[in-house]
Length: 387
Image (tube, rainbow, N blue to C red; front, side, top):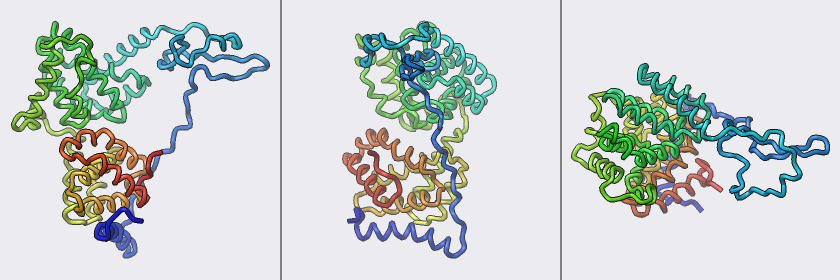
C-alpha cells in the first residue's frame, strides 16, 4: 500500500513523468555522476592475530599511525592472560603526546601559509596529508586562536576556511569538538587576547550562520563541558554574546560583515542558489529547470546539501501540501539519472539526523515527518532505509 495519498501520488508521478517524456522526445538525458567505489584499503586494528609457523604473533601498531588503539589495561577488551600465548615483536610505542605535538606543529605551519596565500584548496590538500582525522579538533582550535592574534582579514579568512573544509576535510564532530575546546580555554586566551570572548562568540555565530555548527551548540551544557564552571566566567559570557549576535535585528547580515565587507563564499553562494532553485521548483513543478539549476552549480560534491534542503522544505510544509510529493519526485528523477549520486543522496538523508533536532522547535512533528519521508523514499527506491 502506497504511503502517498491519491492526490500526492499524482503530483509525484507528474514530476517523474516529465523527465521520462523529455527523454522519449529526444531531450537531454541525465549526466551520470560517477559514484566512487569504497576504498579497498582497510586499516588493520592493532591486536589482530596472525599465525606464522606454530607461533602466534601479536602485532602492536605504531601509535602515530593509529592513535586510537593501544595495549591498554583499562581497555574493556584487554586480557592479560592472552598475552602469554603471543610474542611481542614491537614493544615500544611512541608517546601519544609526541604525536599530538608533531601534529600541532604541522598544522601551525599549514595555517601560517594559509594566512599568507588564502589558498583554501592547498590547505585542504595539506590537511588531508596529515592523515590524522581524530586530531582535527586541534586544527580547528589552532586556526581560530591564531586568527585572534591577527586582524579582521585573518579572522574572515579563518571563517571562510572552516566552511571550505566542512564536511569532507574536517569531520562535523571534530569541528564541534574544536569549538568546545575553545570554550574551555577562553579564560586562558583572554589573558593574552582581552577580546577573546567577543572574537569566539562571533566565530560561533558565524559558524552557525554558515551551517557548519548546529544551532543546538548554543545550548551546550557548560557545567558538563567545564566541571566547576562558575557563573560569570568567559565561557558563559561567550555563549550569551553569540546568542545576542544571532538574535539581533538583521543579525545574519551583521555577522557576515563583522570582519569586513566581503562577498559570500562559494559555498554560501551555492546554498543560496540551491534554496532559490528548490523554492522555484515547488512553485513551478518544472523538473527540467531544476535539473539545469543543479548542474549549473558544478559542485557534485555538494549535492547532499540539495537533498538535505529538499527534505527540510518537505518537513516545514503544511500537512497535505504538494511540496513533499513534488520534491520526492524530483529526488527520484535525480537519483535514477545519476545526477545525484547514491553516496550524496545518503549523506543528504543522514545529515537530517542533526537538522531535525533544530526543526522540532518550529515543527513539533518534525521527527515523525522525517521517518515518513524515509519510508516513502524506500518505497519509491529513492534511498534505502537504514538497518
